[in-house]
Image 1: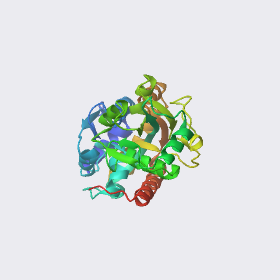
Image 2 (image 1 turned 45 degrees about the vertical axis):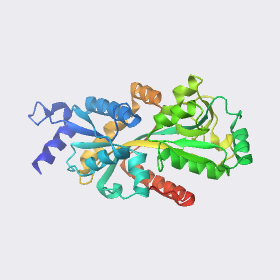
Image 3 (image 1 turned 30 degrees about the vertical axis):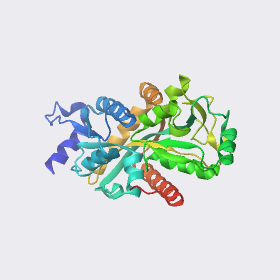
Length: 319
């Protein structure tokens, strides 16, 4: 009770907190991925900006492993006292719970604070792939069912599910080649070991710009200013409704007082309005879509339903 009071006072009166003698205890930002990964970059940026706005230190704490499940579970089992924030993402918080039994339950164990943004995906192939646009790409695969391969960062990964959805809508059959992470997947793609992949703009963009990969389209239905000139697959591949990406956002353990949730959400939104923050997030490959607690919660329900349908229709299972 006393600890919650002190934290609430620190968050709500940050500018004068130290002067009044409240403890300046750091808030922990749990990042369930290794340094350098997209969630890590976004989490660290938000921690820095929110620290400045709150007048309260927010310290990144990387807890990588098991596709983000280890760090997510660590945050889920932390006290709901406002001293823990999770840098959440679609893999461990939306997709993995649909495919395997995990020690946490996102709707029960977390309170959504602020959706930060969504990372679009690019359909990419080796520059020598014999197609010049999305229509030619699909026509070629349809004419050769089972001949071509596609890679992903792992069976059941967000990229895998998005690829399966694309293949289903395009009415093509290809062989899935799973890897342990997107880095090796893209390395083999650039070496011509697999035919194509659908991976995040953050991961593929630099290779496309360097001419090591070519792209046929982006996964946002209306395209994205992050990838000017890249057509939306929804139009280029005649797939109305194909509009998907990987979300990143902030969450706190269940039981965190509502006033603290609202304050953290408000300061996160302020951070996202900063031109400097927006520029850095764009460089990472994240399109800002700021949503508060209620709208973020509704968004999470929609994403869970969407990926559950993809898993069911594709009969996707994780051994």
